[in-house]
Amino acid sequence: MDEFSFIDSIKQSYYKQAALKRGIGDDAAVFHIDEDIVAATDTFVEDIHFSRSTMQPFHIGYRALAANISDMAAMGARPMFYLVSIVIPTKWPMEEISAIFSGMDAIASQYQMDLIGGDTVSGKELAISITVIGSVPDNRARYRHDAKSGDIVFVTGTLGDSQAGLYLLSKENASVFKDADYFILRHRMPAPRVEFSLGLQKLNRVSLNDVSDGIANEANEIAEASSKAIVLYDDLIPIHSSLQQFPKEHQFQWKYFGGEDFELIGTVPEKDWPLVQEIADNTKTKVTKIGMVFESEEPRVYYIKNNKKQKLYKHGYKHLK
Ligand code: ADP
Ligand code: MG
Image (tube, rainbow, N blue to C red; front, side):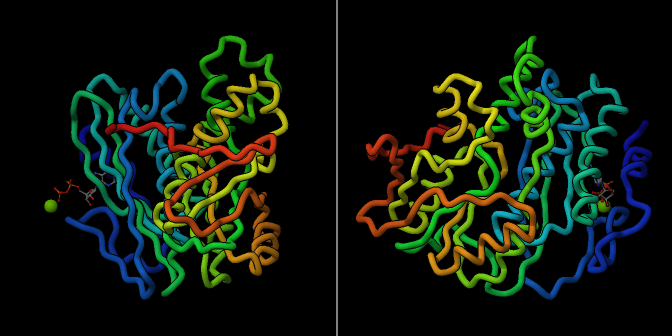
């Protein structure tokens, strides 16, 4: 398949978003939106961000776009469009490249997102760069710097599942573990919390971040951006009941530093907490209060375990130290 028939094969036959005037086929895409526009991009390189030993091509595409959609959720935005730049090594069969795009299309369809452009080149290693575009009403974009003292800290879903899935994918005997399929699915096909995030538009003030590197990292980012201290209560951090079958050190590592769960962590005024729980119910999202925000000279995150307060440092994976 040459570049042109490939582009033809990924071109949508119709546009899902009414705002789109022109998608793939011209030198650039054209759309018209009356709200604030939110844009983010992420790059995934083979053997650094994903490996063919743990992911099928479909999952590589699905997960890469899920990570980008999660950034939209973290900003309070509705995802609408995406562009894909891909570096294709000659050793990769075109059917597998098509499967990567099928994976992206599968999750894009859940949100009526349109693929509106990109770039296709050949190179040594497979690399996928996705740009996602969304929109949010005026004054409803969610930032990390909006935490205030007295806020409740919450997180959606359960933490550590994705890392448990990755661990199981490295095991020959994964099937002897309880809920192995669940953990592996959470790793390969994460579910960004878009509906819950859009539900939060009822609130005037929310600070928000998505869990891509682990809550230790994400909570520190909120604390730093807001110049506040955050205290987390270890026994409130939500984990899946079957996570308890793994060694205690693994559980601790995965829930604080594992990341890639693509859940949301945020803070809201205490008076709004009942509303947050109602929004969670309406969007079938699990939400858990895990801590509080305090005034502080220095931004810090602590966790309280066995009545002992300890500092929680960022130990997430870093590309550039
Ligand atoms: P140009 O030469 O004008 O940059 P291209 O020939 O690279 O355009 O691409 C033609 C059309 O196909 C453009 O609309 C571009 O956005 C789209 N396109 C190219 N590669 C991809 C891709 N990997 N994913 C989505 N759209 C793509
Ligand atoms: Mg051109």
